[in-house]
Length: 145
Image 1 (tube, one colour):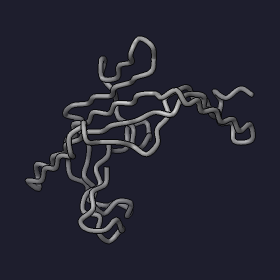
Image 2 (tube, helix red, strand yellow):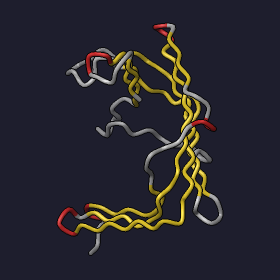
Image 3 (tube, one colour):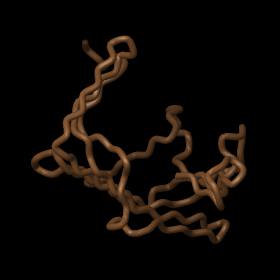
Image 4 (cartoon, helix red, strand yellow):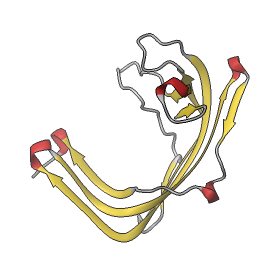
């Protein structure tokens, strides 16, 4: 999650909150505890809820060796599928997705204790996405034509 002061421009970036690079070398990946991701019985609604997620605030990212400070994030995302089907298959890129367009809502809060900084988004009820998909995806070695 990147926060800006003023217009959306690199010079106005004041916080960049993300999980640190894991020991395995993966970037921007966070563990989801049991119960953190739930699906409705019909598979049309998914809810991701993470509380106290340990992240870092790296305001100068992506500058090499940018200073990073410990931070915490609470996040809740809800995806609700519509009836509009979506299918995309590209054998050359070994990528396929089959699913439904969805409406997504997000609520988040962050805290950077060393800076005395905290931020909270607007409530979940006022959040709306322009585009989301809920469905199945396959790529790389998991892709079969």
